Length: 588
Image (tube, rainbow, N blue to C red; front, side, top):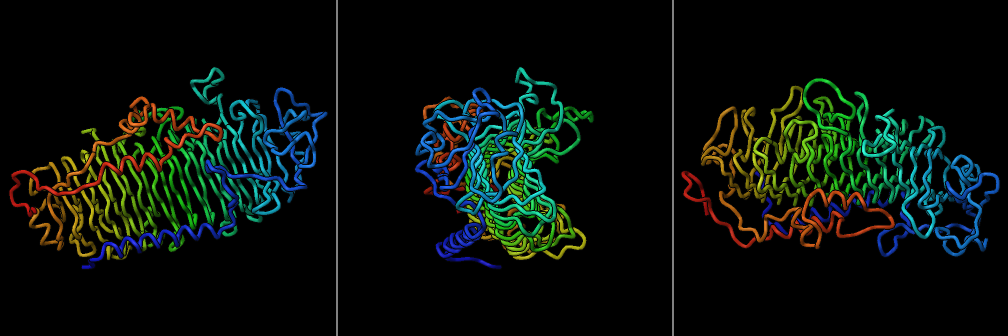
């Protein structure tokens, strides 16, 4: 049995590992431009940048022209021109001024509403001189587009920034006066390229994508796409009107993908699945997710908020052995949905498709909240085919529905050398912390899977459920703390039978402790966080606030980092106390 005795050394190893993985992304061809004091990317035009302005009210496609830094009308800040300027009225006219391979800009008037989307595919000059598609004006909301953004797919798309735009399919929003029954499966963000083309150095920041079917980056060429950054955007309420799948964000085949500080809410569905077998418009299904990410290397997902996904919040799929390298999922906040994080390839033939993922510091609150597919489940990690990996310092908290069931760590197919350490499962009804499915035909045996220093404190369920396994030789359980309100000596199940705690310890070699930690304030929740910052203490109010975030109205109180810090501060502890009057328990 492997046992790591020096916890400080172990923590240092994990920290250095995360730095190494983060460094992989920094070397990709991303638009790593400077940020201002509020964390927003700073864009600066080149001396030969042509800037064209677009205003749906005052614009004129006959008289509009471009401006450069030398033009007095533009002034020192192209986002707030001193005027008078001559804007275009439509995107179709504005794009005719944009040159390929040039750091040209196309800026839309804040507060304008455009009946169409944007079709634009030209590239900028370099990672420091990108093409910019953004917004201008000193006041007003984001410019709104009733159609999506399309890159055409027939050219390379390199060095492009899309910032501060609102893509809103109001004709698919039942609460809009323009609702037309859903109409079609319109796409909000559609980046596609044929095999001879590639995508590099693309930034999407501070935008909104609402009520479309999908938002997707799908290059056919799987080997030459890099440096995609998705940060501080809202992806919400996307759904399909038919049996077609629907995702809040779908990305495939990138090397160097950063998904940071976004809000993903209520994607993949419009209405709850009523289980009547009749498909309704926008009905939730197990195939729809907040995010669906396939075969992306050096993928970092950090400081995002995921809420109420149809099925998965973060579905991360790898379909070839060894392809899933450089994965980091760090400090995200998950609220509801069926599954917080799914990683791997659900296929017994793709052995060890994920290599050393680093999954740390995430918080999953109210598993199953909203219950879109009506399956009444709440899983934190649903994992397949890992070759190494670390799952550490994650929190699964406050599942209070007796009808729901779920798991913290759900392992299927192959897996080896995975460390699951320093995680907390607390105040969860019918949640099994460790759920081990049998090894599928054609898979190698599991080995080196370690559960160490975790706190598993659950209501009315098993601590470990491995009912279909014949032995536990591939797993180690080291210095965990276990507690369940389930009847004493019925906390473990292996080889189709429930084991007493003593039998479990003998079979598994487990040296863990039975008891409970006395935390400082374990009841902390979204509701109490809102109250602590002077807001109405309701989860619905929190979701309203995070959906209201944008480039010109950013409030750090509603960032995942601050919410997670508050939740975790409630789980400081000084002591451990045993369960009351147990029979046959090994207690302190």
